Image 1 (cartoon, rainbow, N blue to C red):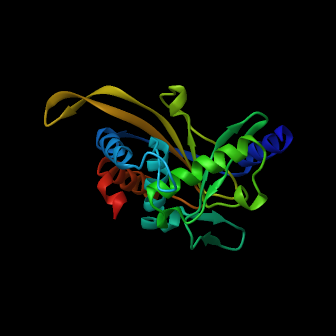
Image 2 (image 1 turned 30 degrees about the horizontal axis):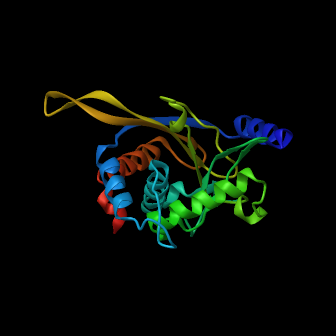
Length: 222
């Protein structure tokens, strides 16, 4: 597995012209919504769920990709291929390395469904029980190291995809609102993109769109 990871990462950095766009997202509204939804969950049974921030980020990214379909694409020598479905790969650390199980058609699923599916995929990834179709493919990736307290990082693109979002920890930081100093929970995210597919303006527009979704998260419920 390490040999395959090494080959793919070296190939990605050597052949894909990476560039990076970072942006800070305020999380307080998202955290409030998460708390309200978790409080409304049944205690147990088939309808029970416990949302993480990552579950909501997966849904937000999927919605943003549907709004910016040129970011849900891959480079080929013949054409840029845009994917009809929004299939989001999510990096999961396992004892031997890293694997990226896929939430397929993530834009069409509710956050509770995404949460339960992600927990199942991650558990089976760590026990080596994923089927090949559950981790091969995908149109865009998310790598979240927020649980480790990481403030900022850049991820390497997972070919043949054209983008990966690096998600860092949410932390309280000073912000200026209406000319006044305040405190907000802020998360820095960095988008790595394939410049052959996505230009700077499009990458910035995608991040602006994602920022709006995360900072006004009620739109995720629509």
